[in-house]
Image (cartoon, rainbow, N blue to C red):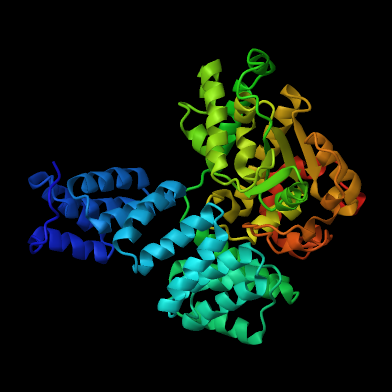
Length: 532
């Protein structure tokens, strides 16, 4: 039996909890809500508020459980359903979020907040044109929304409408000059150069003590790009370092945890381990995993592959890490999987990835860089998948990460020492795979690819069991949505230059070089022009 949603005046304790939530005083709100729910465990309003509190501290699973309970008690509680859609979206469960949003929009068709979140969810699933139309509807009804203009700009950028995207970002900034993410979004196009007025505006916003931390570090990253473009390496590095310091303070990243993870993979994934599991997993050859460090050229590799008529480019899919999280005691727990479970996991990956598919091409690219940590899992559950390791000069790659602000998921990138240790662990992991599964991974060295594209593109296609296609030599002409930071760069002909960007900053990179250690000297197949 469901209970009607109570519309009577809120009890004083619930009012106090709501006020504490409004002021983000979670340490006050939580005990009030728990005390209240002990007295009345069926009040959907209090359950929703506790779910909101859980969501604010990143406990999205707990928030989801609470919101589903609230909706059991009060199915017509639209605020709880809207919160549930948000929580599902945060967990990369966009299909489920869309189902909730469609229910909400059926009841409240003119609700702009629901339409805005639906546009974001559609964008995550590759429904870019529908998302753009929804954003335009929202902005036509409520044009003074800087964050919606910014989200609209993200979508326009993704589909290659760069000028329209720049205009949308500029509109967001005009409405709210302190919106750091909009400034960073312009910088992140890599094709926009800020003028004196832009630099003055950003500097003035950064000088305002009232600017929020999130706006502040975005402004620092954008100003770093502005001063780097002007050739002022010390000025640029000061802003990059400040932005990274602010961002690092918000992230609980432990470099030792990554090292211990790789240790466990090395201990588990022995030659005997793989030999005993020959023939396991789902035999489908459909996925092409392009992995490695972020900012190592994976988007270029994907663009080349997606220019082939048999390959579909998707995006950085969250599905493999999601499957890994469900394996007890991962990665050592790989040894506990049986043949049937390995096949089931491979088949489930394909089902999940199919959500992002838009064509009937037989092969598709999953270019989540962090999948380097899951190569053993790939070999176990999808033994016929192709694995491409996109490798780049360690200094160039790590410095490119240091000046890049990632929306999420790259906690190692906000400190030079963390970056160097992470790169070392990545190289150590891939070297182990080369030893125990020789030939399982094809490596593309970015600098070699851009120095002499054709032989390396031919070798890449051969590794994927694809015939050569001339379109892959002109990948910048391939029209497709690209969501990553390199979206505009891969729409230009292959060029050199990025591998030298770190050199003016060499005096500041001591902590990085110390953490990298001998990895600097054993870079594979490095062109002579790369020598330090």
